[in-house]
Length: 515
Image (cartoon, rainbow, N blue to C red):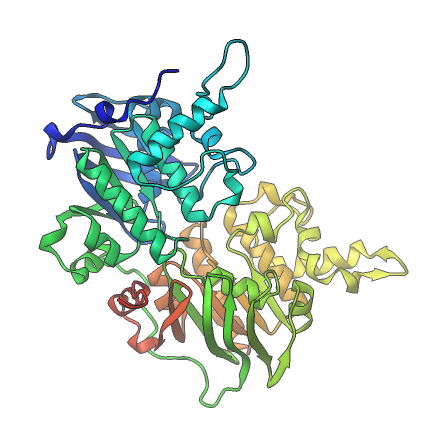
């Protein structure tokens, strides 16, 4: 491997302003899901082009097509005037397109330099890796980027922000002409964000094109030259940043046809008792001094963008994560919840957004999964009463209209919507008073969505209390009696449903502290 010649290989400034990357009519289909629907996108030399849209709009999928992680079902791409095809991320790196993922994919047990040059190691005579050479070349990269990091340090000893700087250096070391940043500031401090922006602007002056995916409106307005908005997997429009306002971008993001009518008023009875009160909840850097209450028969919606801290809030209430401080009160009594077992004992259940990882045993049957939260009641003298389990599982899954040939069907053979129904059955059998739905309809079809909506309304009418976390504004507006909006771990608004317009929710979902 040759030395990294940064000065020569990063200077594309003579071509500034020219379009040199173009994606035309990109479609991507996954097993019944049409994720991208004829999307167009282009990038110029030395440009920061922001890519925006609600969660699930298709932004990351489009960039995964660009970088070879996914292959397009239809459409074409050109790069530097030639047809561009990437069958793998190695292809895109070889072509000069790099990506800094939101979830860093590096090896904490290796040194900084080893991470940068993994798979491209400098070798001594024989079969020995030349760590000294890699440290030297890493130092060159860091000096050019204005980064102060010890290349011999173990990556796992660095902060998330410093680890991200290493990944940027790695992308630059591939002589990248395009670098994609996917939600790069989600876990960074203000100082680290400033350092990142300095690096991006420096790369921009060298002619490197930047694709910047972010939900943070102020960052995008400050950093970008153009903004492309995606909506429901489709191209919604491209604008020059200096010619638009935040409100213009919000309108592009939410300007779709709304098929479901939002609630016009709260359905919670006047004077309904408070069944859960959370005060000053703080969980690491993700939830900051959060307070709210939940009433009997209420569907309390939590809106916000990626990284807002909503899931972390729910996991702390359920005892899956330990809170730093704050109090939780159930029916007027302060309770200590340090594990999911404690939460269930207090009548609190949690349907995780990642149901396959946290909510289900895919290799077990519907009956077995339905009984997971109530196994104690099926055990007598050390024996499990399988007949009783099958009877109750059949009853509840029939009520939910779970589509299956048998209660003994393995969960892995069911659709996403039917898997979700089995999780709901599990908690209905347990008869918890408070149910936390985290992204209840993610990845399921329209028909199953409607059935789950009907069930949630039925549960609320029967006196159950629901916390619903959703990234879909339409879902928040259709289901909630009241809406709490979060941004970067803080509660930025508490809205009666009659006041929860799309524009208002989005305004508070992007309201960063001090802005």
